[in-house]
Amino acid sequence: MSKSNSFRVGKVTGYLRGRVWYLCYFENGTRRRPRAGAERDAARQLAAQVNSQLETGAPSALSFEPISIPVLRTRWLEHHEQVRRSSVQSIARYRTATDHLLRFLNEHPVRHAGQFSATHAAAFVGYLRTIRVSPNGHANTPKRALLDKGVRYVLECCRALFNHAARRRHLPPYVENPFAAVEIDRIPVETARVIELLTADQERAFLGTCDDWQFPVFLTLLLTGLRPGELCHLLLPDDLDLTAGLIRVRNKPRLGWQVKTRNQRDIPLVPALVDVLRVHLAGRTCGPVFRGRRWTDDNLGFDASSTAALERELVRRLTNQDAIPADPDRAARVRLAGRLWRDVGAVDENRVRIEFIRAARNAGLVGQTAPKVLRHQFATALQEGRVDPLVRNLLMGHAAAGSRSPGHGLGMTAVYTHTRPETVREQLLAAFADRSAVTVAGEWVSRNTILIA
Image (cartoon, rainbow, N blue to C red):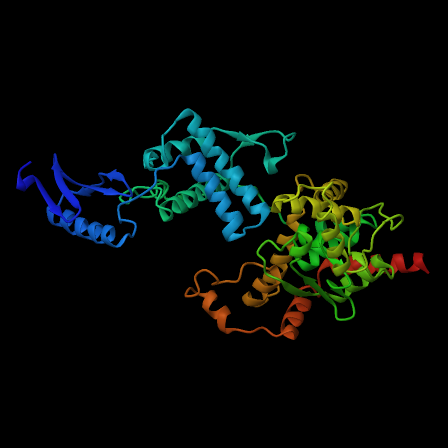
């Protein structure tokens, strides 16, 4: 090979093949022949960098470990489990989203992640447009096409998967993330689940059809903006203070549950809701705030008087080798914690959804099948009441604005702005002062107070 077609820098040889320069060297006993580009000078600079890294024992700039996409997916999920400590629910969503990619690969196989190109990614988008899925993962529901928002979520998960591959050197250094070329953020959301807010008359009709078990549940969702999961995991006496008029949304990692965004918050209660909850509890001071419709404390069999008592009960169950494996993973612990919540009488999220559908149907609200609409009602009421955006962000429990990009807009303002509790209470009460739900709540309290008396 002539000198014009090759060069050597220490342990690295460069050679020209066609119009492209390649490097050749041994790393950890393995021969490497990566592509270096079309320019000789750039190839020499890269060879010098690689040679320096080889001399010091550092991984070379061009080294990578080829890996199949199924193995990559497994390692990515393990990273979220062991390092990121993402919630069990989030990991389950990531697994479901990337299952679509694995099914696509059954028809379009590639040997390793580095061979999955932008062309493959574009074909995968077309594939997603053709499949039919069961909404919310319920196998018995009629299947429908994947909505635009769902397509974008699947692609975002796949993009994150390949970003992880690049960080872990599972992609060749000159290969870009194949999903970057798809321009996911520019895909329009033309088909999405429509949220139809309730009018004032519909809100009144809905609450009017609720029975005495449903009414406190749905009024609380309507006047606090709680997520159904947050409502189902409220415990007495720590999470509800009727004297102060507060609901405290707290993480409970020792009981296998955490807030979706991990952001804890205090939500002031409008006086009408305080009255409703006082009647609902009827003097009860421990256990879940909202229990199953037919739940009683008879034959409970363990101490459930406080959060600490429940934590001790879960530890006792975790040490029972007959109940779980000797070294349970986090998902197994969450399942066992879920049984404890059921045993103590906490209402289940799916039951809240079923009861909402039943009440909405009785009120003639066709198409209302998700209690999440009540959270939308709450957020809209805050907007209509001109509640300060920072207060809205706090009450909704969204991820702190700017936590990932503190230099943008409201995020940086949030870092330097401190909202006093009395300001939060004042604006929330003003927003709900004239809402029909408050009037209906007063009528419900009057009726049930008479019945109790």
